[in-house]
Length: 280
Length: 240
Image 1 (tube, rainbow over the protein chains, first blue to last red):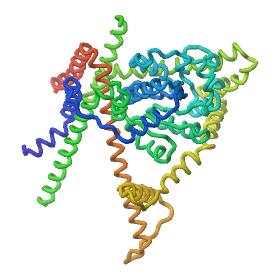
Image 2: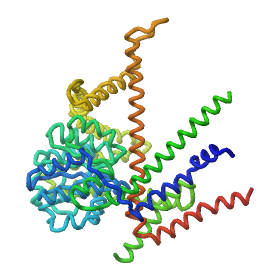
Image 3: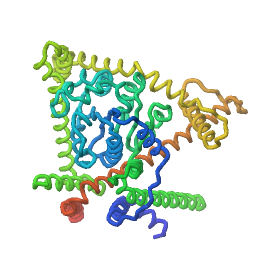
Image 4: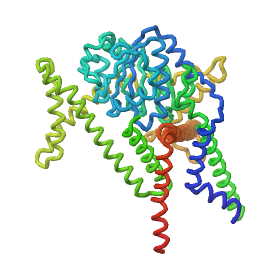
């Protein structure tokens, strides 16, 4: 068999590809290389914006991602929460997705140090799952107490000091949307930014970042944190090492492996094509 | 962590391995994990939805009917949607669906022109000359690729090629058309690359959260998955 055919057979075999990819992910985690993580201007801009918020500001955080997306979104969310709590900001968490309560409890379990010393009802509140999609987002913008009567734990929202301070969209200095769906972004742009001009920050998966980029370019959001890379950069900025940084070596090596396979695949294809043409 | 937590986490690790075993071959353990996931997700979503209705509407109706009487309307409209399953009264469901669609459309439409159209058009009106070379090149790319993409989707009216020679208008149209195609190809390439990044990120995070801490369950699940994949292959080969 010709070397080119052997190479084609190897890269065409998905078992080989998947096994090499798994090794490229596991080995850098077990034996970290320590590749440097440089901070991009986008992540720095988001960090600086939040640093300039006034002490004790009110922030709205929508958690709208499934458990599978935790690895991409949770590290950035935790880093943001840490920065906000360090500034004394108060956060109202909500989810318009059914798995929101589960995701919030998992987030809290991953970052007990971030939430320690913070009082529920005063420093943060979790409203739980609010059904209704865009209608729920629009209604929450008008009035939180008018939309939900109790929070996720059954406490009447009208009795929570934080909700009494910040009951509608215009009471919030920033709305952070942590999501794996483009729909949620559209809801907040249409129902929070356009009518009330509440500054928005998106924390999204890499896959939906190109779709969300037009909103950021149009100035409808103050910035965007995309995937694990942005999470790792943010963890460096806030000084809390987490899942984002732990994943960077594995990300780099696995992407390098994929690049190598794409290159080999293209070379094999073009060489075979030119040899077939010369045979004719 | 108590024994049930460890069992749950180990089961999670095993289910992750069995789901990913589909990358090699379809097997009975993958099917088991898939069905378990679908059933659990459906059950969880239903429970959450019912809890939401109870928290928002039913509790308010019971505790303060004078101020919460209006919740009865969406409760009835939501209930009418289940009439879809009736052969005789299926038409009743149309009312609930109609109100749902109408409210959604009304809420979206009131700000879509500003949020999704005007703001986006404004964002493409950029300075095409200046001192910052990189920014100007970027602005030209945005301007040309936006025009090119719109030209590509112009199916109704476009300049016709005059036989024998290319008119300037047709040449300009074709140039924009090609810019649109290549611009979109680059965009799709970037989208594909981002998709790969996301999926690889998922695998890394799943390994870090579920598999590495419970490596014994992971190893056992991997061995079981390997057996589940190999047995049908061996049986098929013996049959031949």
